[in-house]
Each structure stands twice: as C-alpha cells, then as structure tokens.
Length: 492
Image (tube, rainbow, N blue to C red):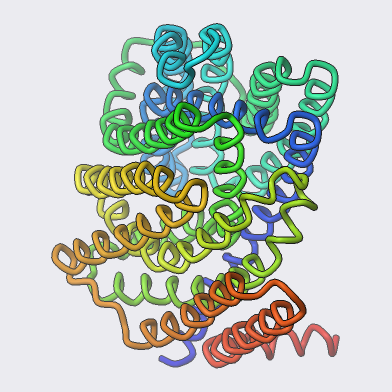
C-alpha cells in the first residue's frame, strides 16, 4: 500500500514537471516578446494590446461552441477502442463544426465591434481595430478543433512542440511590426500570431489525420451532442472573458491605457507564472480524476495528492517571485513599469489560495456537472470584477492586486464549501498544515517587502526562500522516491 501511494505521488510530480517545463519554456519566450513590446510601445501599448486580446477572447469563447472540450471524450473513446472507422468519421464531424464556429466567430466579432469600442474607449474610434480581430477569432476556432483531435489521440508531444513553435514565431512576427508601425502594428501582430498557430496546428493534425472534404447532414446531427456537452463550459469561459474585458475597459475609462498596461503586466507575472505548476492539471490530472470521479474515496485521495504536490512545488516559487519582482519588472519590461511591483507582490499571495481551489474545482468538471461549474465560475468572476472596481477606486493599481487576492479567497471558500456539500470532499489535516506553514512564509515575505528596501530586505527574503524550499524538499522526499531517483542518475 505504501509503495502504491509513493508511486502515485511520483506520477503527479513527474507530469507536473514535464508539462510545467513546456509551459515554462513558452513563458520565457513570451517574455522576450513582451520585453520588446514594453520598450517599443510602452505601458500604453501593452494596455492597448490587452484590450484587443480580451475582446478577441470574448468573441472566441462566445462562438467556439465548446468544441475543444466537448469533442475530446467521445473521440478519445474511439481512439482507446481502436475503432479507426469511427475515429476518422468523428474527426470529420469536428472539422465541419469547427468551420461553422469559425464563420460564426468572424461575423459575431464584426457585429459587436461598435459596442466594444463604446465600452472600452472614451476617445477615438477603434471599431475597425476590433473588427479586424474577426480574422483571428475565425482562425482560433479552427485551431481549437484540431487541438481537440491531437489531445484526444494522445499526441501530447505534438501539442508541446506546437506551443513552443508558436511562441517562437510570435516573437519574429510581432517585433518587426511593433518597431516599424508602433501601435498600428498591434492588430496585425495579433492576427498573424493566430494564423501561425493555426497553420502549425493543422500541419501536425493533417499529417496524422489527412483532411477529407466530404461533409454530410448526418455530421451536423452527430456534432449536436458535442456542442451540447460543451455549452455550459462555453458560457463559463465566455463569462470569464467578458469579465476580463470589462476589467480592462473599466481601467481604461477610469484611468488610462497605462493603467491597463500595468494591470496586464502584474496579472501576467503572477497568474501566468503560477501556470507552470497548473499546466499539468488539464492534461494529466483531469483525465485521471474523471476515471475515478464516481468513487468518493478515490476522488478525495487523488484531489488531496494533487493539492499537496502542487502546493509544495509552487510555494517556494512564489516567494522567489515576490522577492525578485523589483528586479524582474525593469529587466523584463522597463523602468516605466515599476509602479506595478507593489500590485504584483500582493497578487502573488492569491496563488496560495488558487493552488488549493483548482484541484477541487476539477471534480465538478470530472462529474460533468456543467451547470454547477457555470454557477461556480460566474460567482468567482462577479467577486473579481466587484473587488477590482472597489480596489482601484480606493487604492489605485495596488488595489487591483488586493482584489485578486480577495477573489481567490472567496473562490476557495465557495468551491470548497460546494465540494463538501455535494461530493463530501474532505481536505486532510496534512494539507492544512502544509498550507499554513507555506502561507505563513509567503505572508512574512510580503510584509518584509512592504517594510524594508535595503540590504535587510534581501537577506531576510533569501532566508525565507531557503526555508520554504527546504521544507518542500523535505516533504517531497518523504512522499516520493525523488531523492533516490536523482542519486541513481548521478551514479550512472
């Protein structure tokens, strides 16, 4: 029993490192593009890009019909059963519906462009900028369908390579446009990046499953079930995109594009950075959780193990990030972005709560309780938008960081309470102990960042990093065979 428990911890740790490593590479490459954007366009340029991307995401989420999610279970089932004829047929169904979603997204983006312009700007007319995003929205829909095919047929290596290639090409495509056309190059860069992502994805997908231009009415009927399955998740994603768009529009109207740019940088540094650990959950953790979702005992065990490993891996990284932000912000962007340091430092604390709530939230997904998932996601975004409006009006850009913390605390309480009531989920005292110790270290690190800014700051923060890291390694060494595996590597 102990051996099986250790193997389970090893599995979680292994795939968190694998998928986290890919995500880390993508983030590093993206930071290069953001550095050039900051130098060439400034905070206002990053803010303008953030407004456009949030509008693009909203249009995409409203019209993609959940194909990237709804197509996976059935296609994966055909793949596992080695039913090649049904697999090929259903791939045709996915591609037909992806084309429909693409056309729908194109039209929808053009139609809502005037409304988004009025919502986002109090000066100038940017309707044409938003309308031009229709091309990107259409291509994202095609990419989503092909991504679902690769994911369901276990082409994880191809998906990883696609992410890296897209990130690399985005630098070479966007930087010249920023340099020669400045703000006017932002929209073409977004469209070209979406196009390159689509071309790279279909290159891999068509190589495995060639395109066959033979569509029928039956394929429309077959796809209806896929769309129905993904509908609630589409609505949840659309609400999330709408919330992000509203937040950026509010900051632009109440403040300026500079405030939008600062918020976007702070959000990216904290949420995206933590995504290194979270990236394995959808690819590895979610399928395993789905397989045992009807068994309360096994579900509890799997959720708690994922939570333990994620918390222990992420916590030292959060203290490092919090400490290094005064150096990272001017290094990765420019000195113009230094005001975001205080906002990002407090927002880092939100990730301690997110790493606890996220594994629990996946239980609702695994059980296909789509309406419950929609309501839980909606409640989080309502709290987030409300908290940011109040926080920004009261404390400026720092208040948006505090609002992110408040929203994630509320999310943990709502998701945890619902899981206890609906699924009888129970968090172990072991996790409570780990969380209390690591959170205490994190909150002390934040307090030190507020009280000191000289040599004492760096000495104290370095000591806290060592304590957090040593504690995580000590626990992981007990739970897994990590240390023994490393020793065998060195001996060989």
